[in-house]
Image 1 (spheres, rainbow, N blue to C red):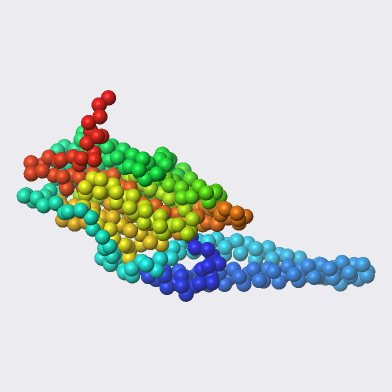
Image 2 (cartoon, one colour):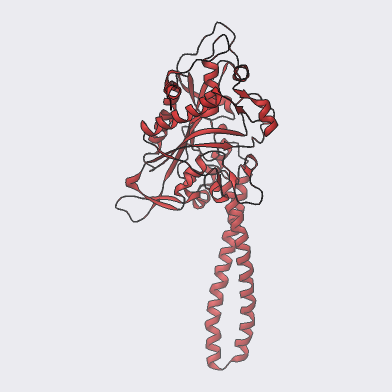
Length: 423
């Protein structure tokens, strides 16, 4: 979240930046009015306490001088003042809760390099890599290839769980497992990330720390009767590994990678991508998370993007990179690059990774700090994360880009070692 004092002192900037992201300016106006109520109540409480302290001294003097009648009158008056102070204190608690909720609802400020725009149509393409394959036949979409090969079973998944689920069989299951291992091996052995396996359920505090709550509650799955939520991404538990912690500057940057299933209700996406693996309630990802100093965070974003791109280059899958515009930017991010892989069966690019710099937005919510060398005062870290990569979308990209005329699929050379091992 943004610092309360910063919002108060830079209301025009926060309003302007928020409006670029499609936020109703009334949210900022409501913050201003609520903050004014809080400051007025604090000033009134302070004035009443000062008056009570002054009168208390006067009462003591009156008692010493024997003027008990006037002292008693003042005591009665101060009881009323104390009662009013208690009422104001109670009101202040409520106002501060309202103010906190408003601050948690204000998105991060987009970086000045983020292009203006209202939707994904305004995202800015910055590079392309690889050659789009040509086919001597009309390329099939992955759901047709998967059903033809018997490796994707949506009908049975719907029987087991409902719409937007998939059952992988045989080669499909093994390909998914091989991709997970390839991603983790690449990021740990070549890119220097530490692998972790976090819980797949987290509490409300953890969800709030990375910005999923309260903003995206409708897009999450919660366990009835428990303070537990199914994670929408490994970013949530991995970032919160260091919640309420002060790190040493010498240990930064810290880099983690994690495989997890991810769970999203896809609220508001009714009717979108109803076929195939694009938009599922359950999917798998290998996530990349970084903790760094403010001075290094923009450099680390570029390196994070390169680490995610390296996976697609290794698999020889054509892709492009776009910078998200202000209207398409995620709630917590200051800047985001999307990597979009080419899908010949759908004749379009589709997102396969988002790499974001959150600056200190998540760190302030989660209480993640570091102590600069030689300094006593700690500072907030900067956090970053990106997909390296989404497993299901990589699988479908392989099916579509490596398909043969007879419906079979070739294996990318980088995956061959994961299929030739014998036990």
